[in-house]
Amino acid sequence: MAIRDLRVDGQPENRTGVKKLRVGVLGMGFMGGTHTQAWQRVKATFNLPIDIEMKALFDMSDRSLELNGPRYEFERTTSDWREVCSADDIDVVSICTPNFAHAEAAEMALAHGKHIWCEKPMAASLADAERMRQAAHAAKAKGLKTILGYNYIKSPTLLAIKQIIDEGVIGDIVHFNGVYAEDFMCDMDMPHSWRLTKAGGGKGALGDMGSHQVSMAIWLCGPMKEVSSRLQTVHPQRPDAATGEMKAVETDDQYSAIGTFENGGLFTMHTSWLGQGHKMQLAFEVTGTKGAIKFDQERMGEFQLFEQSGNDNMRTNGFKTVLIGPWHAPFGNFCPAPGHHVGFNEMKIIEAGEFCRAILEGDEAFPNFDDGMVFETALQAIQDASEARAWVTL
Ligand SMILES: NC(=O)c1ccc[n+]([C@@H]2O[C@H](COP(=O)([O-])OP(=O)(O)OC[C@H]3O[C@@H](n4cnc5c(N)ncnc54)[C@H](O)[C@@H]3O)[C@@H](O)[C@H]2O)c1
Image 1: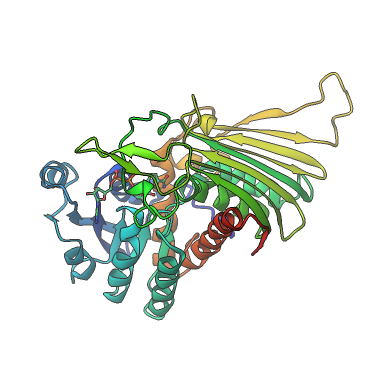
Image 2 (image 1 turned 180 degrees about the horizontal axis):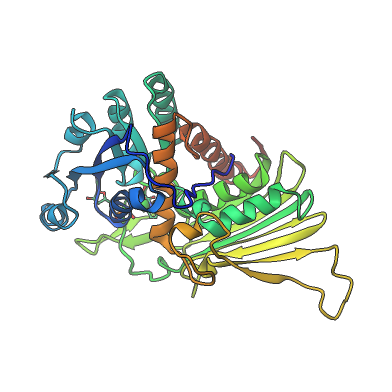
């Protein structure tokens, strides 16, 4: 889980050995837009010896294809995702469709020799995720790479926090406390969707949002060892988007978990999409034996650090706020001046940059499908612990 410094410091681009990457995108919803924009900006942002061609866009909606095909300058559009996964003129596929559709697309595209950038969570079930992992393993011999869309751990702020923890600035990890709250499902009239079925989303807030929280905790603090939890469905029915008829909700609205990491540290975490007033409170505090560090995605351009040593004056002893700047790579690839912010789409460009480097240099990207299985296994353990009303060992 090493951090790769993506700075190129203005080096002239080496045009020998430029690699052509012909891209297919599956799904033009929220994520499809961010992947497409990232593909279009990654080469210049990181001065990569790469030529990106936007080849094919799949979407279920003809209206979306009519609008977004020309808008993003795709060479063609299609309402058949299999055509994209099997096409001879495509090298890499962005999977931005609902969770249940990831596995089949990934397997098919890998079998046809394509690199895969797949959105999180990896799949709607652990069995599907394992199929994807195995397909990626089989494709490794052909040099094919995978990466999952865990964008929040790509921000310059999170990369800086990870470095600080790894350098031992806050000492050995004692506690990770995470809260992830959004309020987009608070409205009880919010219609039913694939996210609320076991077959479609797999897990509810746990899979949709908890996957970010769990991956972040593991990335920062190491593998989880054991967990106890409680999942809860607060609103058991939601109206069908077309008919208004009430349909059963099969997945969780929120969960709380407690457990330990393999290194002995404790974790506590809560995630909810019923978090009144919160838009993107993906927040945590990591406490160590020598200090502590705090972060909240709603203020993604800063973090708070407390170092125990050198804080002897009790009148000023406390956390300091650090604003992100060009010295926190790869912030400088976007902006030369500190105190400004990068945003969601920039995290996606960093993710695309990491993926392109892996493809160009033959390294593994992080998190690939192997890493994704570690996260999926932890998510499943959290669900199993709640269902069994028992501690689960990972
Ligand atoms: N990384 C992040 O921060 C983040 C944020 C939001 C969503 N996601 C993930 O991205 C994926 C897509 O989410 P979204 O919010 O973009 O969804 P969305 O509803 O905005 O878009 C989904 C797209 O999939 C297509 N689609 C719908 N049903 C399909 C089917 N049966 N088969 C194939 N395609 C189908 C639709 O045409 C649509 O373009 C999900 O896995 C989600 O968990 C990740």
